[in-house]
Length: 289
Image 1 (cartoon, rainbow, N blue to C red):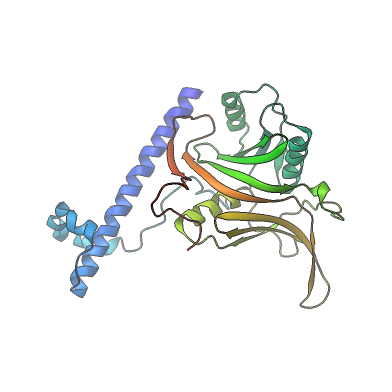
Image 2 (cartoon, rainbow, N blue to C red):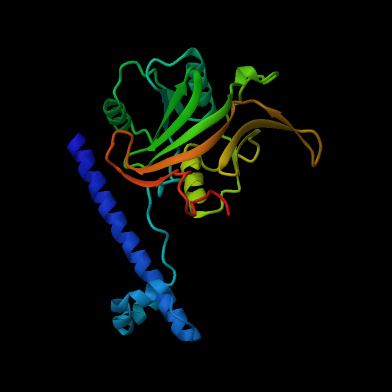
């Protein structure tokens, strides 16, 4: 089973890399054609690609035919075709506060199931999740009793995305929260506009079922501010034709993207797509422009 999963992952990565290379080549072809038609200087990456310029006559018809390049098939290509099935668990020997946080996350995410970790190793956890058609595994971590980490691993091929958690407030710490509705929520994503931000948005939105009903009273918000994503969870009641009353039901926390790894939770040697390196003196990727 493990060898089969590893083989399928290699085949998937090979296919996706070929598609990425073809997409980059199409972009260069398009840039070359635009530069020639507008009599402008060629972009640097096109100037350095002498083979592309030699093949231009051959590629010219192909370039025109591939102006509308379809979106590259990625790990989340099936979003909208089926409802997600999410497994929520924790690190080993969780504190009572982390266990309570896991319960609240299970209620927060529709179609989620909570698993007491016990002595289950990561490899067995991922293998069992694949066998039961789980789409995502959410693992919660803590430091001295306070939740401080959230890992989302998408199945069957990845990616695995890690966030640090800050200022976690549980439902029971918020006064007058009432009962939590389990209706499919509306999702609001704010200020996730860059390529990295859109990648993060896709990872988070894949946890929730698509196309909730218009009458759903639940709203889940991910609002980015200086690369810290504020998570809020509200229910609302209409008090007039254009007025609503919001009530926070929790939990509440801030997330910061730490790492995106191209593999599942059990693949320790998987390639790193992006990693937070705040102390390096160079222009870093951000979630918003």
